[in-house]
Length: 72
Image (cartoon, rainbow, N blue to C red; front, side, top):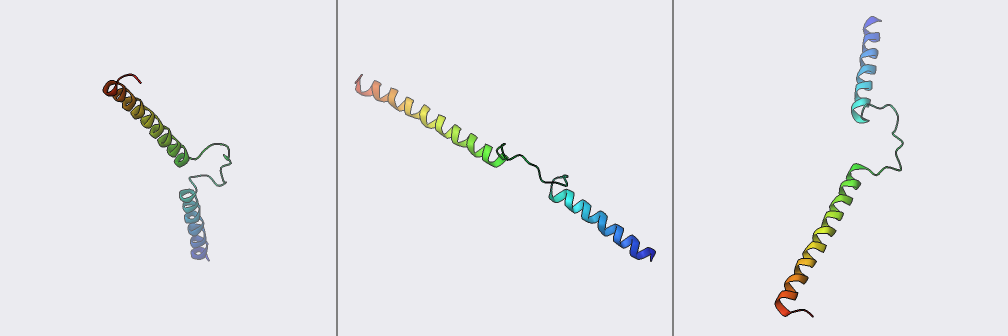
């Protein structure tokens, strides 16, 4: 009887550890629907950087075009 009890308690402990590992230490789901997730936030940052780079490149092209062909 003692071995079965030890086995059941051991499995319960392993289950609790697995739950913590799988769900980040929280026994309930986090309710943060309003906050963007980290991957989405990173993607938004990349899109913003790409837009800034494209705008900067277009400004440089316009400057070179004005220098090469005069003010039009």
